[in-house]
Image (tube, rainbow, N blue to C red; front, side, top):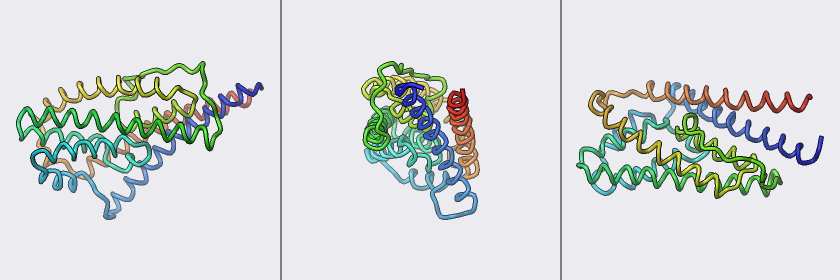
Amino acid sequence: MSEEHSKQKKSELYSALVWILGGLSLVAYCIIGLLNASIPGVEDLVTFLSTVEGKHIYVAAFISIFVEGLYFIGSFFPGSTLVVILVVLSQLGGIPVFIGTILAVFTGWCVAGIVNIWLAKTYRLKIARLQENDTYKIKDNLPTTWFPAFRANYEVAQITYGGNPFKVFLSSVRVKLWSTLVATLCILSISLFISIEDISNEEGFATVILVAIINFIVGGVKLKNYFRDTNT
C-alpha cells in the first residue's frame, strides 16, 4: 500500500469516527434527558424563548443556531426544534422581526461552520498530521446534509478527509442558504397548524434519536468501507 493511499484510508477512518462520535453524543443527551436530569429540553426552551422580545430575539437566534451548528457541542441541544421555535415566535413581532430572525439564523449557522472548519483543519494538521488532499472533491450533498447536525459532521468530515477549507466553506454556505429558504417556507406553513406550546420534551428527544441513528448509519458505512479496503 502506497503512503498516499495509506493517508487516504486514515482520513476515511477519521471521517467515520466524526459521524459516530456525533451519534454517541446525541444518544448521551437523550438518555440523560429522559432520566429527568436537569438539562434543557424543548419545554424549557419554549418557556425561555417566549420571554425574549424585540431586537434581543436576533441575538437569541444567532446564538442558538451558532451553538446548534457546532460539531459535537451542538449535538447536546434538541436539534432543529430550537430554531423552529425561535422563528415561529419571531412572527409575533411582524414581518421585519421575522426576516431579521431568519438572517440572524443564517449568519449564525455560517459562523458555526467557520469554527467547525477551523478546528477540523487544526486537528488535521497538528494532531492527525495529514495534509490537504488535492484529489478530494468537495460536494454539497444538500439532500443528506441540510440538517444542522449533519452539516456540522459533514464539514468536519470533509476537512479531516483532506478537503480544501475555503471550498468546504463555500459549499456549506450554498447548502445553508437553500436550507434556510426552504425551512422558512416550511415554518410559515407549520405555524398555521401546530401550537409551539404543545411540543413536549419527549417529542424533541425523539427527533434527536432519529438524527443519532442516521449518524450511526453513515459512520458505520464509512467504517465498513475502511476495514474492507484495509483487508484487501
